[in-house]
Length: 499
Image (cartoon, rainbow, N blue to C red; front, side, top):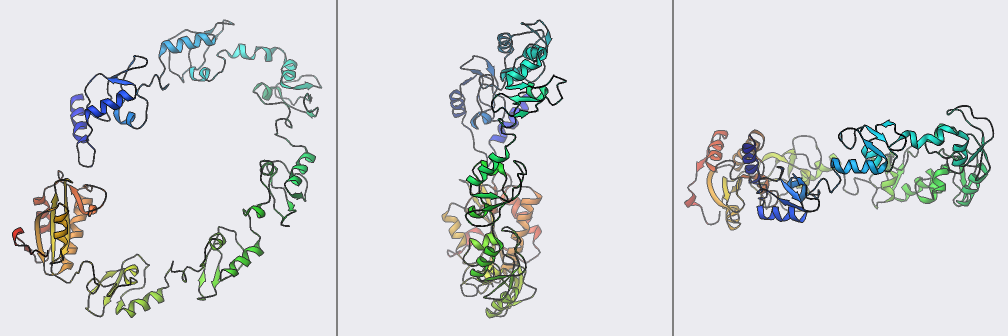
């Protein structure tokens, strides 16, 4: 079974689209990562038996993982712990293991070398600096609560009741009266909320706001709640939190994070749009009327502030359906359905050549003669002219490619100059039949057979398939099956030099 998997993986490494890996190059990479292979290279995703050059252990890293930056030895990298190493570490930390190592994140039965109790520390937790014995680490706190509180920085002012009861005390640093609980102090919380910056003196909070140029208008609400103030610089009334101001913040209007509705209205008018309704916010659509074209638009204040032309119609970012119809008619194109959008296929009829089909507004709006009609335009495929459906091959790229070209267009000649070899040709009197066949064949190759492109860039890659995945004979047979139009099989030696 394992041999079959190796053979399958080796075949997958050589598929078109996968870079072949040189075994010597792979071995060199593993040595550079600090491990020496013990067997020949088989596959990038198969465990490769190696010896670590640092610790001497036998490991089985995957070539693909090492190439992506993973360390070759999981022991040296700390991803796996050797049992002997774990035992030595626990003994140094003060615990004697009583059973085999269970794993870095599993409870491990041990005996405390200090108090003799049986304990169950976790190796990864002890590795972070925690004491293995919970009894020894909390013994002083359990015996004398008052000593615990004094040691934390607070002097109790009343008798101790319980670990959960608020204990009236005096902070030994700022001498304020505070009410910590023993339980929270044991967990590492400072007893004084003022010294720990969890609480704030009201006078100190006001002084901080005034230093930032803000005059409080209401009582202090709390460090994390909005505090209505008056900005002494711009006169607006922001509501920042004390935490934000103490961290270096200030007036949202002065910094540009907030906008005065009157200022927003002024900016909109300057940019040529007249708002309808109240200011909704910088990032929400604001219904307005363009002063230039009188259309109703929905820009955001944030976008208007950073653009020169606020109207999507005047700037060309959006097309009015009536305008699109008028441009199409001016180029002798008659729309057969409502305007769908700039890039969505639009059914039209050319009044010059009577061609009827789909084009897009983007093509119609091009500045070239006959734009919008594939027959009348000066470039591109012409569906009304005799055309070829072709199958070509490129040995260097290991690819087959299907496509269409008008007769005498020179497209096949260009493909030949780029290393392609013509393998099959079907000639149609109407290019539209060749185009329809091409679309059916691409659907068959991509959706039915699930064949990927042979490469991913340039040279018509979207119409290619790997050379090893299918033959040109099968492609040609399927093409003849799918088309219902009349065609002629062209002898390859009879091609015109202009093709």
